[in-house]
Image (cartoon, rainbow, N blue to C red; front, side, top):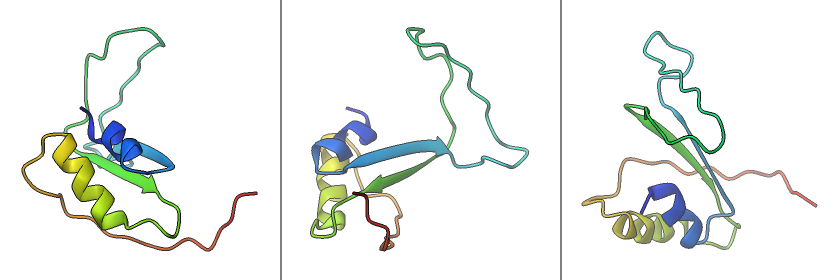
Length: 86
């Protein structure tokens, strides 16, 4: 299972996957039309997952990593957004 899918199953409201090298000379452009098979992947990803304020994001990440088959939780950081939707 992809880590992004596992994060959603672990309680993330949304997940964004981007090239960790975006904006640099190492950026990997990926152009894919809907329905096409993925041919290229980023060599290094940056994931941003949004959680409700009451969610234990660290525990959700640990569950998601286990579900995705990762041996360890990658380096991460958390920040709190004061923005409210709705």
